[in-house]
Length: 337
Image (cartoon, rainbow, N blue to C red; front, side, top):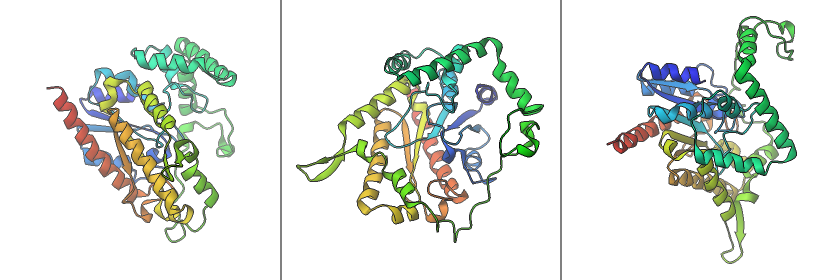
């Protein structure tokens, strides 16, 4: 990831690194990928690198690569899809792998005092299983910084032969990974796309954090945000995004499919869901990080399912991101004078 970013920077381009989950990845959009549309809107002086992966938290993976290069490159930006009122520490392992410790032991990370102190504090309150996972990650990445066996294995597996059996590659699982195209399944026809969905799963996805985010005020007879949750979120941003880089970061929260929302939640739950996302945007921006709450004007055909965007939805997202990036660059240019 660092090498790909450096290549764009060396060509004098403004590099936009995309991180986060399968929504950011553009799952289901095929050749009409939203970041291809974004590249077209931004033009040839930009390079958009979509490094998002399914399920990946916003502040790991490509974010760590961004941290390693951003302090000396003001024309490098990080854009990620995230969940409202939530963030993670960049040392958080994902799929059993820690990008943070990989970069740390290879000497790729500048020293961020506040971020390093926050990681030390989180280590102090680890559970035994979390400690074991971290120590294993650290040992693995320390050894890799000496022997580079992960690079060796990845090169062999991609170019020569693969030795891990999976049900998807069972007939020829020894073939090199480059021979297996990463193809999305074809989208479900629009007339039947939303006929079958698990209401309980959707309801859980929309309201799962309400019990932590809201508390009922007996005096006003209404719901209000939990001060504890808001304070935690503000501190999490402070601990995970260095002050000097916040003007180069854009966080995106994408509203869920309006049709499925209307079939799943009450008006009160829908209103609270929007308030959570709007509050999250306000807090990000108050901390100096740009934010977008996308989707309030999206239509049903802008979605492939409950949350993933169709090509038309992706185009709307890329338009919003391109506009916000232009605003960020103007503000950053003014700060330098």
